[in-house]
Structures are given as C-alpha cells and as structure tokens.
Length: 280
Image 1: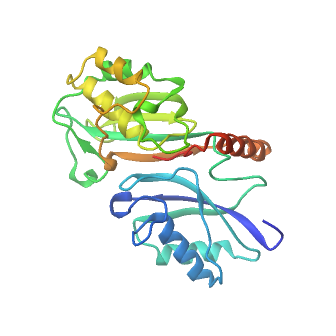
Image 2: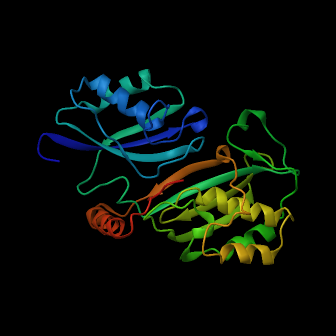
C-alpha cells in the first residue's frame, strides 16, 4: 500500500432490493459501484478507488452489518468524508462508520465467519407489510422441529456442492458453525433462520433454505434430504429461495494481533482452491 495511502474500514448496511448485488457489473446498479463512484467523486480523486468486501451479496440480498475496506490517500478527513457520503448516497445504503483499519486488516481475508439470517412467513405468521421486502412468504406452516433436525445434519466441515452453483476452480468445502430456526419475538410469527459459517459459496444459504423448507413444510421426506445432502453435484430438485429473505447480519474477525496471519492463511487457501469467499 505504501506511505501515500491509508487503509480504512467501512461498516455499512443496505437494502438490496433494487441493486444487482454487491459487485460492480457493466450497466447495472450495484452497491459497490455506487460507493466507489461517490468515494472518488467526493474526494476528487484522479484514480478510481476499489472496495474489498467481506461478503459479496447477490442481487436482492440485504446487509445489516457488511464490512469493506478501501485504501485512500493519506490526509483524508474521515469525519467530513462520512458526513458527505451520507448526504450523497442513496437512502438504500448507509455507511455506519469509517475508521482507520488496524495493521494487517483485510475485510475479506481476515474474516473468520459470516452470519446470515433468512426470514420467512408461513401460514402461522402474521405478515407485516412494512417488512415485505425482507421476508419470504410460504403457504404452509413450517415444522421447526423437523426443519432444525434436518439442518443439524449439515453442521461441521463438509462439501456443500449439492447446494452451491458451480464455479470453475472454486471449492465448495465449507465449515457450517450454526444453523437454527426460531420464531422472532419482535416480528409476530416471523421465522428467522440463522446460518454461520467460515464462508459461503454461491447461492449456498438460499439453496440450503430451499431444501430445509421443503422438509419442514412436509413437501419432502428425510430420505430425500439425505439424498440431497450426500450428492456429489448440485441437486436439481433443490429450490433456491428468493433473495429478498436473506440478510448478512454480522462478520466476525480475530483480535488485531491475528488479523494479518488470518488474511495470509485465507489468501494461501484461495490461491490453491480459488474459493468465492463469503459469496451469497
């Protein structure tokens, strides 16, 4: 990075409804594209800036606590920059904080886990129209006991190929640390399914949810789920759930003394397997 630039950490959230995902795409509105545009414009930079993100969310997926980093010229007034960004950005994006990044920090490679929540309304829920853009509606009542029992079988280190869209050279091996569904107290009857993993491959959360909802709703039995989870390739009977129900809620990092080591380990793994870290 050199002495002419300084690394900053951005903590942000966004409503993904009208974005074509995080990553920059030609002729499409993306979260990364909008942020990079305004950072360069506000700071009047000659060269475009590049944001690196903890989890590249797909079109329609939301984030409550996304993390990114950016290298900016030394001398940037972070307070003024944050104030100006809040004025010019769409109200669908909010930068919560802009802070100096600790030595060795990499928003993507230093992360040790990501926490997503998928929200559902079933026939036992009381839908609230104010939250319709972040919750998926299903017609049946979901048996959470059956749902969670099936989900527990996916915990640990395993190949999630049956639930991931294939990408050339990318690994589908992940460690799923937590998967649990319950009805939220603050949203009447809303089912919140929390998934925590070291990283997620493309469409993994929504595909896992599609399989578990099929079992919990009684559309499929346990034998079918076992066939799905043990398949060697993506299973064509698994429904990918709508993007709007999914939100990136939190990204976990080690303490500052271990940021650089974690980033180096993750980069080394990526160079040997080319995984899509944190992509959902």
